Length: 310
Length: 165
Image (tube, rainbow over all chains, first blue to last red):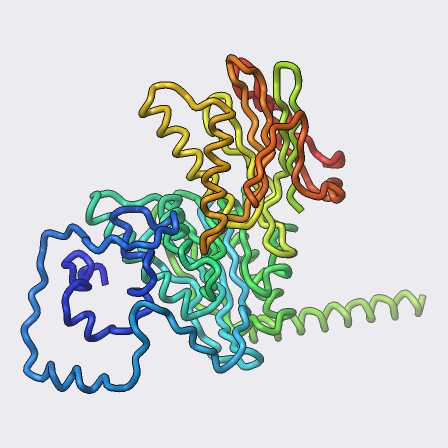
């Protein structure tokens, strides 16, 4: 995608044949206008010229006429977007969290993707590394998040190629926020938490909110996660304590929230980059917790019996 | 519920804003600053819909600074208030209006202190005191940022907390 853009591929005829009804093209203030940086101001016209020096030459395909004729079914014209009705109600079930401590930044999330009351997929990746020092946790609509993560990765890479330095986390958050702004009021639902190496945690959502903070939890399981985090979170946690706190917060949230569950993913971001902990099935943790409780109840029973017999 | 308040005195303007950034029922930040510094002696306090506030406020902020760079002198508070109102009014009848409520406070070296109230329908009124929000649940809000503007500039005063720490 980044190479496509630098070479100006989108302007060629072939791209238009392959993606005739792409909603991205119709949205006049689409993310492609990062060159002029006016996407935040809701302008109705799009700047077509990318200013790229390279011209991508495509070979003329022998079957190009048949290719064209194949698209004979009605395709909505490129200048008005048709809303596609969803076959099922969207539900934004998830638990993701991120917090900063002395040893870096922790990002944790569950792995359940729900669609209404159905578990669509029990093993989804909600935490995506964008580059070696930036990790993004996503919640909201899975498809939208995947797309916008790719777009963000592309724009950060383009920035790096053009300016020969890495974009800061705040810059990335502002860029993402400005790119999402034209879609405000539409059904795009994206709530990303950018976790960066420079100990910054920024929450960006498709409503337009952009908040920098020390701890964020997003999704239907977030109230439960906040409850656990607010109790124990301190700057002076050790790495192991922080990891176990994040695990516990996600576990408790998945226990109570119906739309979160299955496994927990954990990433630790430090100055050296991100490192991922092995994905852990929370079912095991649940059984361990039940055993611990049973043992405690037994112990208490034993002690009261001893007391009673005295 | 977000709350803004401003009081104009004989040679100062005092403004305060709450520090909560909430997303439906969850308080996401308890130390969020809703005041935007437009220039050395002008502050804009902005509340309203999530993304609109920052987008609109930063747009005004950068334009006021641009004016100073181009012309060498700063916009007066009255001029800044009217510029803001004009922008808000232009977007009001577009497909994408900004839903923001503002208080603009400033000190003009010739005219003295001024407090301007502006709401999301871009009505502008210069008033001796003004507020936005309900204010009934103030006791639930953890703290307020308080600032004072006088002929020396903008001063940060002590944050007001609800009492029990």
